[in-house]
Length: 191
Image 1: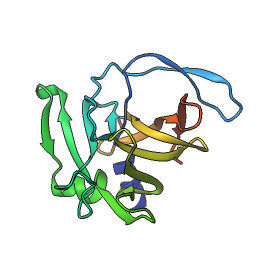
Image 2: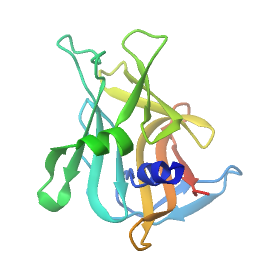
Image 3: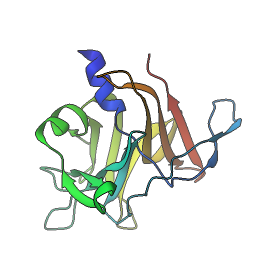
């Protein structure tokens, strides 16, 4: 059962710009070139938090901050998750019940700060994501990536074909260091 939930989590992927990019990727500070798919990048708005893309198709799972009538994060449901189906002219589609409950939905935790929330993906609760409105009026998601607090931008999941159940080769997590502004990267290889 645990492997099913891990598979659901790793089926999601976030992609930042769809190019070949050199980023610092190891704990020792060395750089590596990472092949990035040329998937479309979801448009950024003031509500954009992060997105996920997978190697098996170009569609993206998008996470936006959801505002209430006063323009603050909605305390009942602070994150709106949906598909951007690039195979269908960037059509926006809501998640179905199973996708929300087992794979791409979020679990919301209370935060010590007003109008801020901690969330995790329902399929992977180990990584907590802090969601809030920043001083520029943009929604922001912060998370520890490769040991550094970063503005979480996207995830990319490489999926290997294996009969009926896909296997995850690796997951790449991308963000921006809050102190230096440089890209941060973490590669996760499932056990």
